Length: 518
Image 1 (cartoon, rainbow, N blue to C red):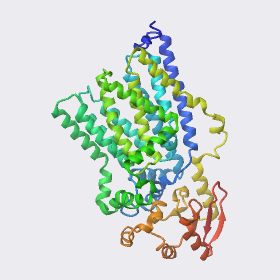
Image 2 (image 1 turned 90 degrees about the horizontal axis):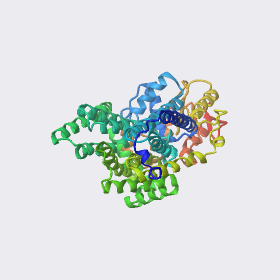
Image 3 (image 1 turned 90 degrees about the vertical axis):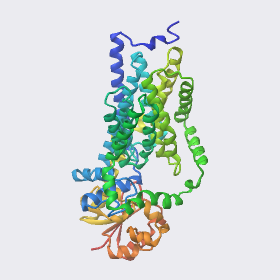
Image 4 (image 1 turned 120 degrees about the vertical axis):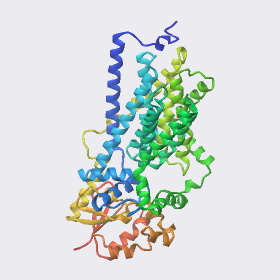
């Protein structure tokens, strides 16, 4: 009877065979995840969202320019300086960035797995493996994670946020509470320096200290202070840049997104309820994400009836549950953007699997059910079709280097190239780009709605000024083909009027390079 009530899973096995099998299974799991993540990382297509980071890094590395002060950067600056350092070492920026993304993602999964293992120290080793493996597979094959992974610069700041959470929630019985909360805040501050979206973690983490720590008010306030100081320390380079160009920072980070770009996005006009409904519909499209709603309901039931008895685990679950509404708002606050759901998906999966392993006997069947569900997606994958490892020709991680080489060979010499997709051509030492188009296509496509005096103040080029701009600082080449004709028509017309030679580049897209005759 004890076999069917699964009570044998509620205590560690003393069998050496089980202990050895546990270690072997972990090695197999991480080997599988690493190769799957690597191939997905290399083959996930590139997106123009990282144009500002990559192009900003190029002009910073080549010309010593600073974001907000010398050019428009519509994001936080840490990726710019990281990528600028990479460009000093190698022109293969996209491949290097993908490797950083892969290392961050894989490290995050390792941390999540061992955090779950530690929370289930009282359980059978095989059960601990089942719960941990389920969590990782649900993350790996979550449709929102698959969409955003390696493409939208979320992986490294998300790793920092997971680290911040783990450090913060390890303080429950620690004698070094202030130091650990300061480190947690520092990690989160640095994450915000990479992506502003991670500011949504600060409030719930700070509230977690004040509401859920079982300490005196004095100790809690001291922890809160150290956490805040840590966040501040992580953002010191940002504050330095703000002091150098406060108006530029305000325009790039706030005014552009909420006063200009938001008005141009149809989805931004929806009410919060409509955006949440849209998110819910997206979640229900795939069972891998919709089943997580059932998991969250299970967590809330256990919390409602006070069925989670471990105080340390309760603290972690409370902080995570408090964080989830903020991540929901991150997903839909401006408008529903699929990659914004990535952090929510990861933290939701973590709280579900922390909770699944906390119960005993018959409740263990729920954890086993989730494990069965977690292995369905990897079994459904057509690996031969999805992961063509015989050739690197189709790897998007190398596509920008190939395009940079094609442009370089066509021009045959140093050249300043004008394009709305500067990230595609900067992996060549002989190519330089325009600082005015670092944040293309985003600022360019909305420049018509920016007031004339604002454009003048922040050196923004619109269709009104672009002809005079190109006549004054003529590009040696113009690259088009990445965007609809109406966005690029001004560049094509200028090239045709001024006798530029057209070259069709042999790529998947119909890219055209217009070269100035010497």
